[in-house]
Length: 188
Image (cartoon, rainbow, N blue to C red; front, top):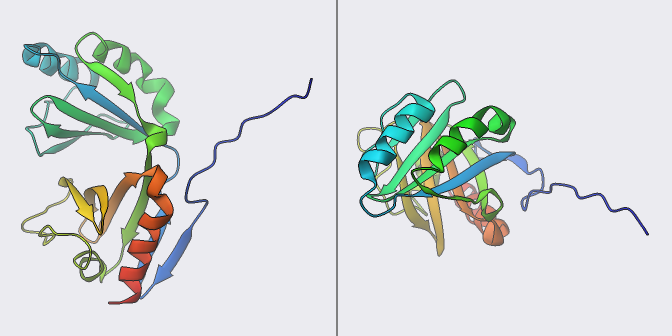
C-alpha cells in the first residue's frame, strides 16, 4: 500500500508582490476559531476569556489583542466571537482553548479562511475603491475590524498599523479575492 503524505497548501500559494507601492502578501499559518456564546452564558463566557487570555471580552464590533501570543479577539456580535492567532502558537494556546470549551460552542475554521496583508502609503486609496466603510485613521483606528464586503466577497478587515491591514475572505474564493486587491492597487 502506498504511503501518502499530506502537505499544507495555501489557496493563494506563496504570493508576495508590490503594485504601485502597495505591498501585498499572503498571511501564512493562521488559526481561526469561531466561538458562540450559549443562551444565558454571557457572564460565564466573559469569565472564561479573562481566565484564558487575561483580558476583557471586547464589546460587539471591537477587537482586543491579548496575551503574549497576540491572540486577536474579534467580537462579531453579542453572541459570536472569532479568535485569530498564529499557527506557531497553537500548542501554547491549547490549554486556553480547553478552558473556553466549557463556556462556548467552539468551531475551528482555519482552513475556511484565506488572508492577505496589505500595506503602504497609498493603501487607503487602494482599499477605498473596493471597501464600503470609512477607513480613515480617525474612524477606523489600529486594531479596529469590520465584517464587510469587498466587491462581491464577504471580508473581515483588521487595521494592524496606520498603513497596514489584514484582509480575510473565504478560502474557496481566494484567487478572486487576491485578484480584487491586485486590480484595485493597479488602478490607483
